[in-house]
Length: 472
Image (cartoon, rainbow, N blue to C red):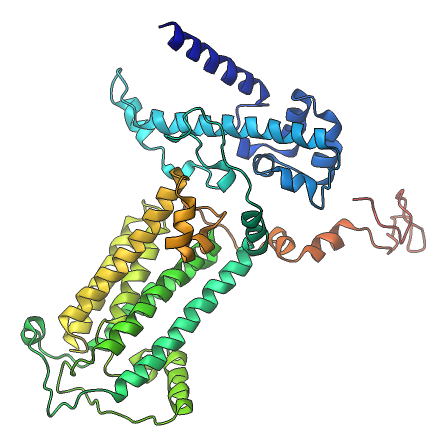
């Protein structure tokens, strides 16, 4: 009993001390630069306010992710070791307090309330996505670390990789190149598979219960692509207006590229006969590599769609149209608010009718459609489940690098569980983040004289000298 009492007293004293550091009831991520300056005063670090707050504009989100390497390297370049250690220690205590607060909120959301069910329902509404998912803000309360002390050490190789690859725009561009390269490879494999198409006179269509039941509807395949076009327009709007559009786009490229890379192998390994005699499929010999590459480029430029004049045969295991419909449906329903149930229902109907139109056109066997839906949905769910698991478990960092290198590369240091928030994508502040030169131009008072109300020839009544830049 005495040991338990001492532990509780120690924890209360520690968190009471941490609460004194809080400048307000706001979350640390909502702190402004003035709040950080007040926090520095409370921790006897007032002499660094000019450097951190006035010059570098450190707010709450930047403060909680600050580490020793940031203080040593440009542009901060602190040289006094004692100051660096004191600031790092204070930030670590603040980070531990922040993680403790998030952990307690998460635990309270799932703990039963003796007084009734109304409070329990309110707590259940607290989503996991309210957690901050930067690597420095991950929960420290694991079974290996019950006291909330961060045992991790900065690996120089990890820090070097982070500095080189963590750029959101670079990794998003790499994901787009990865997806486009896989689509080119899939189109090239499709041309090779078309040349290896079995002769319909010797290899008739395989028995299929669903195709034997549904009569052939020649225009059904075009209706399938119309359903896919509507889903694609929804996905495109999400990419434009979602607040975390780079994460959504990067995940779309990573998952779709992996699925179609698997499709390259399944198409090439087994060549199946044509599912219907009405299909005009005959092997077309592309003897040279140049002819095959040119044909692959034609398929990619047409989007692989029949309405654009692209007709292919032999790519039956598994259905690329079904995989595309399923992925678009899952991405639209995942990255839009849950209250938009009308949109979600409409997307599921488009997915279901698109699959039905594929079977009604007798363009694929039933097994092709089932396997495509299963692989696409499972890979999507597996990827996002892994992202949610990483949010709360940090002990298997090295194993994820080995077994899931692409996931680790694209998701390293980024938000894993993201809220569905939308914003206008084109603002001047965002352009300043992309092009820092705009920020420099706007903050400098270039030397055009300002006309006063007294007349055109009257010099400006400002204290600044024309041609002299304002001090930043």
